Length: 116
Length: 114
Image (cartoon, rainbow over all chains, first blue to last red):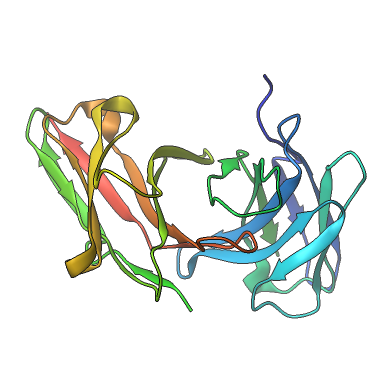
C-alpha cells in the first residue's frame, strides 16, 4: 500500500510569490491534515479536511489556504510569501471512517519550502 | 485547549543504555496519546498510541509507554537503545472524539553515542 505522497519535496521561492503544495493520502483515507514544522515553533497545525470540507483550522493567517478534492487528494496554498514561511510542510492522512477522530496520523515526507 | 510538554529538548544516551523520554499533557477529558519518531529529512512515524484500557502500551522498535492519569504523563521508554534510535521524538495528544486535531509537543532530540 503506497504511503502519503507529497510534491514537490523541495522548492525555493522569493518573498511575495505564492506556492501550492500537493498531498496524496493513503488509499481509503479520507482525512488530510497539514502541519508546518519549523525549528522555532515545532509542529503547528494548519488545517484538516474531510470529504472535501475543512473541519478544523489552526491559528494561521488567511494567506494559508487549502482544499481537498473528491479523490481525497489535497492541496495547500500560501500566497504573498514571507521569509517566516520557510518551513517543512507536512501532510498527514487518517482513516476516520465514521468521521470521528482517532488522531492516528500517517505522514508524508514533507515539502521543504525556502523563501528568499 | 489541549497542550503537550516535552521538558527535554535534547538527550544523549550510550548505546545499550535504557531510555526514558518525558511527556506531560493538559486536556480536560481522557485524551488519545501518541508518540511519533522523525528521522532527519523524513516525515513522522507512529511508534505507539494509547486510547483506553491497559495503561502500558507496546509499540514498534521495542518502545513502550505508560499512561499515568494522576500525573498527566505519557513517558516513552526503551530498555536498551540502539544507534539507529537516534532521531527526534514527538509526543502528541488528540481529541477524544470530534474533529481531527492533534497537538504535538516540541520534540526531544535523541543522540546515541557508541
